[in-house]
Length: 423
Ligand SMILES: CC(C)(COP(=O)(O)OP(=O)(O)OC[C@H]1O[C@@H](n2cnc3c(N)ncnc32)[C@H](O)[C@@H]1OP(=O)(O)O)[C@@H](O)C(=O)NCCC(=O)NCCS
Image 1 (tube, protein in one colour):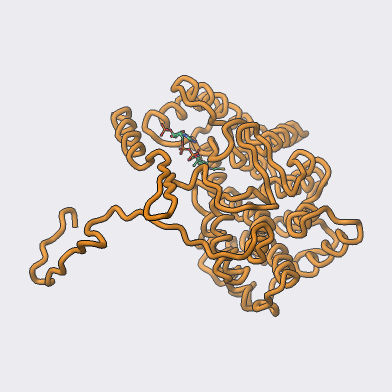
Image 2 (cartoon, protein in one colour):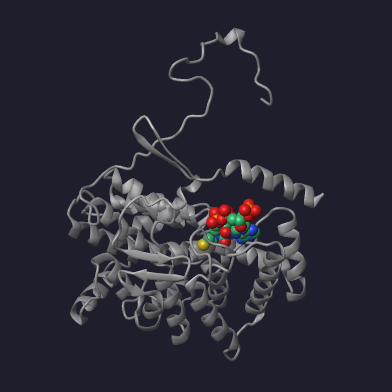
């Protein structure tokens, strides 16, 4: 039965996923490739990815270098300004982030009043739109004003995630501190305790790893909205919506759900097998661009090992993740599927859980990091920094429905219409 269902789904996927078609229709090049795979839609100066060799570069610097030497503040500066800061520039940037940490009182109050069942990504999207009304430069059109707006969002969304984590439990939000780094301050606002320095650094690196990833679905969404010249908050709110989906930023939460469902390492193989037999996906595996190891996942895996091996460290999630990784590799191999490896969300789930971050906050945490990459792209799009001039995105669609431009459908009076099958 499961096999039949799997075969049916696979057949349906084949229909949904035609191969790329390139031809010329009435003078326009027609490139149809579902999901825009392999299609270059713009130039960018921000991020370079080599999915075959597993390389990720922010503004010329490898992710391994940044994870080893940089901080989230410095990486955000790099993404927004295009180069690494001097000491004075970094100090000034860090000071502006700290000065923007507090939420306006009525934003905080509206967040506290939201139904406790509100999904955290919906809270974040609502807060982003509400913050727009508090930005004195909302209509500012210069690059400098855009960077200042980005700094405000970067600082305030982090506070909003921590505030919601507490408010939904009926606890008072903890005001930010200005003597802690961005990463350490978040963990402090979440728990009320100053974090252990190793935890703070692991979280800092986690934020660096998630800050940017070129034209993924949410960044592309931000750029499409930016191309209409909507303001930065509108672009970011749209990006948050895109990131919330389980095939994008929501995968980390799904990974923890999966590990919980599996429960013990000895059940991993059967779980993976039954998912694949029924045509379902193993969450946290596979990537649209990387056909080898995701370089961020490798760094996160190392950090997950370090956290698990610390005295008092909880090994459970790490051991389970290892069992799933091994079983998935074996099952994918057995089924002749290559190029599917654990992605960033797989190990983010393990690391964030070891840091005490609740599973449904993993995607909001991803957003508070990715907002630096989103804003860099929004600015690049708005100010045409990598292209000759700004242009609104407007692809074409190939109409495959009934009627045509030559012969449209006749309008049938409502009394004469027959109920369509299935309605
Ligand atoms: C991320 C993802 C959407 C990228 O997929 P993609 O590049 O579009 O690849 P496809 O969806 O075309 O998948 C290619 C094949 O690999 C399989 N595959 C890819 N990821 C898989 C997974 N996690 N579990 C099972 N099979 C998977 C697909 O079923 C497909 O097989 P088919 O050709 O027989 O239909 C996909 O790997 C996925 O859904 N992963 C799980 C969700 C996740 O972790 N998302 C976070 C991404 S950072």
